[in-house]
Image 1 (cartoon, rainbow, N blue to C red):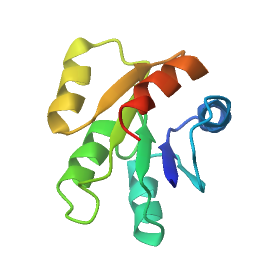
Image 2 (spheres, one colour):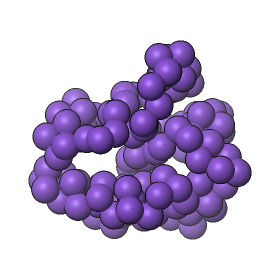
Image 3 (cartoon, rainbow, N blue to C red):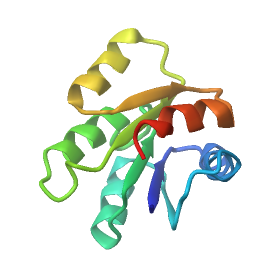
Length: 121
């Protein structure tokens, strides 16, 4: 299963890659993007089976990115999990309403990621 990690923090992207390995998630290629605009370009180049996305990012935030993904026929079936520091319940609800299959709050553990992805993959 190929994965796209979308987060403006290179450190968080690296941590998420490591956590996917620690959680023994069966991943193939893991791609990275620093915002929604870059993520869309990655998806045009390489289809994935799972997206982990932050909400708060420059250029195109995670909610705008999610909205775009879910309104595009070739990507709308791809499960998106939001991984965020966002404390606002309204933003999390909005993400779920836009089509996110779940969310994990930062800071997170490998166990939390594994638990969240267990029902998806």
